[in-house]
Image (cartoon, rainbow, N blue to C red; front, side, top):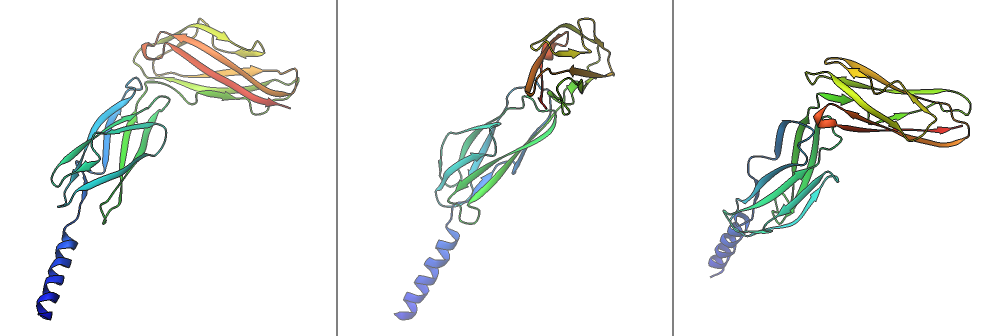
Length: 226
């Protein structure tokens, strides 16, 4: 009798070990949109989460790595062999080049209680700026300070600046309504300021262009005058 009980307990233990939910991210733990344009906002896809185990899988949490992603899971309880759909969106506004974000999925999969899904995209902007702002780093009262960024045009066409406005009259810039950034050219846009008092200094250079995907560009200029 004792032997029978021991065998029964052993069998139940073996069964309990192998009877487990298992979270599988269908297609792998990395999803890539590849090369995209900056106007493709936001990037979207649907990821399938599968229960490859033999017990019910429960997803307890889906946490994004930063404010650039969004998720919607249609079903947090997944039966063995079934799938649930995770809708994913990635905001690439202001991003230039390669970017990787993460989503952490927590579940009752005892062997892998958390799984990380990596989202990758390569944002290619043929008309790009080295920065979205100009910092006047050596700003002093009564002294001229100069800051600059680089605007690079690889769009295949010349790009014209059709209008320029500046919120602070103390700013002088080398870009105007007649500025043309030729295809393949790197243009150094400068901002000059001579503050008349100490304190935080800020301004915005607003430009309209003939480039369809960047018809308006707002460039912040700031610094701390001493």
